[in-house]
Image 1 (cartoon, rainbow, N blue to C red):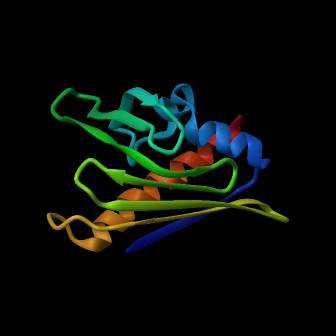
Image 2 (cartoon, helix red, strand yellow):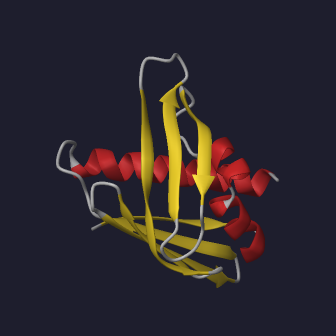
Length: 134
């Protein structure tokens, strides 16, 4: 698995809300400024499904990032299977400095692992910036 992490200087309830609510997901879920997430839906429960449309702002490319939750423990853990069967685990841990998010995922085989780590870390960094600005 590949792991990325960040510490968010915000209360756990705010971090959880920003991570899981479609109205927030569409504002932070991109790795670079030339991409965005124009659509997100989220049925946040074990067995529930989610989908986010990630798209280049110039319209040249888009894809749906989707999957099904295998575990949801509010303010603590989220686990899911992506549509292609890869596993993702996200943990939320309250610390004296806010909330530590650790996200681990099975890599895909098309792109180098370092590229995948960089992309997922960039999205997590964008989440941190967004959440701390609210």
